[in-house]
Length: 459
Ligand code: TYD
Ligand code: MG
Image (cartoon, rainbow, N blue to C red; front, side, top):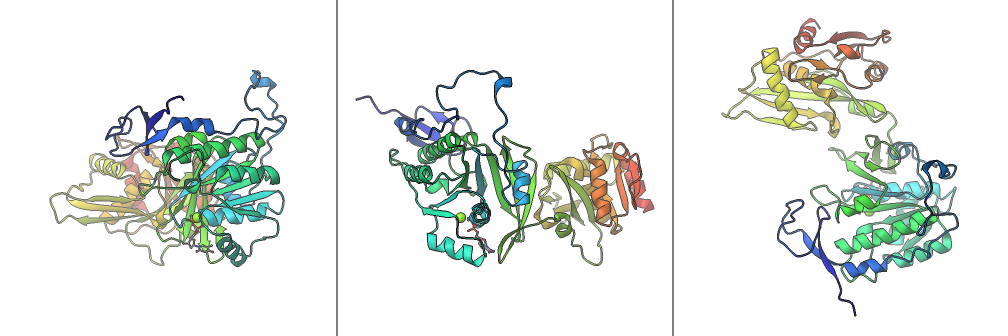
């Protein structure tokens, strides 16, 4: 009998090692190696098992790119506009979408709502390994979802799942969650690296060969990364994260990997008593400002994929009690804030080395772009001088180390979105100044930090 081969796989990054060691040499994490049996690979299903006419499996012929027929694979809507947007315009048959998120983020709720609606148009199968069928039935009833057509199954064995799927031919298959699935040919416990890997490989192979859209639910670790090997992220087509806002009411669905669309799209949902609701006008919620605008508060326009999002940035500058002034940024990159403070000192002449600086983005939004630089700087100046800025002012632009104000993408669209929400004044980079005036908007275009500070004085 051939000797069983084993390898040691890092739970964090998925790197393989031939022998055990305390620290993963790929990602430098300690105590993350666990042993997997490589013999398990033989348990992947025979490729002919799920083979459907016309679908390439093994023994595929070599073709030129031009010869590949593109007429199949039309996308179909998931019935939730925000979800479609994050997927890049709908669901692609045969694609595998992994949805990650903290416990209670609403992954099961979101997928149940989605698949109940889809079940009215096509064959669907929902497999749960975590909740009982009664629990799901009760939830569907409470949410008022159509329940007559959706096929349900409580199962954790992947070969049973694919066997059931082969007899019902669902077009959309949901598996909740990949961490509780097991494959009887792999000896390790569910949730372990080898089980997650083998089960995912099994289900993905089924999905690819039968052209079924597959949704997998994945748990995240407390550090926020996907539990199980990184290798899972390589196997799937799309990886979406459902994240909760600070106040727990809003959920954002963000693409981290997408083979069929852009990854910078953001879908926003509100968790209500009747499940997740799409938020069609997200700027309105993040902009619920108080009657009186206090110093340090300023609105900026972010660009999220294909739409503009207005958010309020708040800054608080206070004289420091300690030798080391604090710089704390929530929702913003604090290294970037430290850099902007240095720019403010050198090019704006404002000395803040003896001040604590706090900054926050209202509504728990995370700012990942540089377009908020100028707004953050001006909010800091506003707090420093205890001078409130007008309610109808909106600011965006990137700030360079030489104190120059750099343009950001989609300036025109950002201004239009701001105008739509009743903003009448804007400070923007010179290169973003619109050629035609934006209706109802007084625009001040600046190219240097000093000009922006002057503009603030005149307002
Ligand atoms: P769930 O989908 O079970 O989360 P996950 O599968 O990501 O762990 O969502 C559970 C949370 O959602 C729970 O904390 C309560 C909340 N919730 C509501 O507020 N309203 C609802 O109608 C539902 C179904 C859930
Ligand atoms: Mg769940």
